[in-house]
Image (cartoon, rainbow, N blue to C red; front, side, top):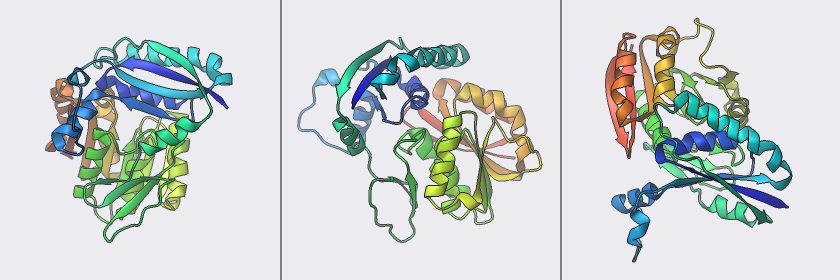
Length: 312
């Protein structure tokens, strides 16, 4: 089978949003190549190279690659460009997306699929959660909870700093009686993790149809579908549903837009966990949610990203 490899030139802060757009048009894989990840590995001593070209450490474009079937390329490429334009119009004031130059090349066969899969590994996050691609066999250890994710419906695998920090904070606040709401759920990783950790129920919302299908599929695969409800929406329209913990891992500007609507679904004394925030937007988010009567509780930082928790 022949594929088209699309390569988008963007920035570190824009790469996840660009990847989310591309996932709407492929089941064959999206990959982000960012030199900052290499720098972080060296800094954290997670990996060691005997020799590294100094030129590699110079910041430049972040490349987001997606693979689509050759037959679909001409159809989806204009749609992808329209989605990029909408993304820039909605968030370009807050997030720098770079040139968004797009190149394409034909790829023979599907050997790259196996190469792409080798990039993933079980991720241990926050002491108890292990996020594992569905094709990898993993032996669960005592006290661990394994969350399996389907490779064809990504939208959040736990590898990104924002997702990882949300999972860490979730493990700090969650109790067995917790009801959780995940706004912009993507793959469903946060809500599914909440149930695996013992939460009573989780409501997952997203405005993207593919994300909704992904979250529902992953809930079924993890055996938690009876304790999860997935809906296509910005937020829950039912104000009677109140959460002990609400999570929103989106972008700062969208978080601020949603801020006035969030308290209606949060119990008194409930916890709000936010991420997708860069330093230049930190004060903006703190002010927006403080104005809703939410009290700042904790802050995590990983790389250029922040996660915040508030209490109502």
